[in-house]
Length: 310
Image 1 (tube, helix red, strand yellow):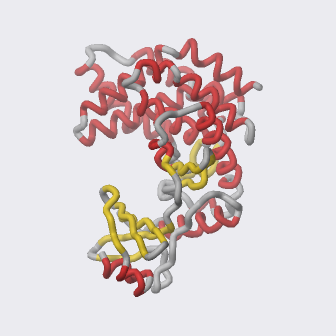
Image 2 (cartoon, rainbow, N blue to C red):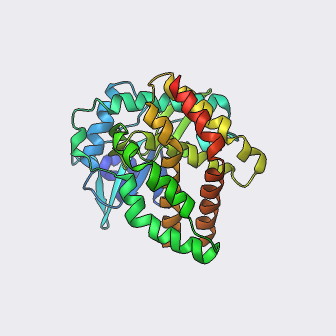
Image 3 (cartoon, rainbow, N blue to C red):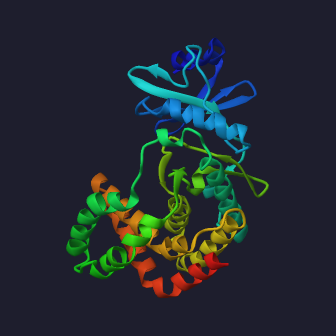
């Protein structure tokens, strides 16, 4: 690994390297801390590098990728691709010990500010398109429906009707732009109650902007779902999340109507993903989340739509 790090400068041969998780290392060089990450391909690293530099220039709390001595934002080592960026001091959102109203408002407002800037990025059209509805319909739904029939002994027909019958036309009207696509608590770095860092922009795509907001909401529910009291408090979190977002950038009425439907689609993708990995326990947990949210729909939807309406 020292040979790899030396591609960013010979001084990195003196660095201490600690594994954080699979494919991620913490690099300590004197008083400076960095994060080294493995990437599967270099194909989109240039686009990410340019985007992160632009976001930084716009005042977003981003840590850009660092150039190697070969003047590329990645290094090749033993057939792998690696990127390096400065560590952001603070506490990841999933390590704070709870999702308060203040957390929700801060996350919502931060996301809205990020979306506002991403929408203005001059090279946005260079990123691939992510069509959530198509992904869910063609990839996730067949696997999930089959698993539900086998595991739970019932069909998801009511959910299919809710999505297919109510979402098709509104989905086409949802605002589209560059989105983060991995906006979960672990990618938000907090210090003194404020978000000081947003991590992991390697999944940025062109898609519906509502995806990021719903993705954060369902990520929070996933972490709290096994605790009934926290589960019941989730709607309050969603309410504050929307309030925080709308304090910076209003959502459209169509986004308010589609909010729960987009969460359904995200859950379908998670269930199918875990089935592909052979993790039926996580697939079942996400199935239980999906069914629980759908059961609360008549209660949730009017509250969400009223918040969006002002």
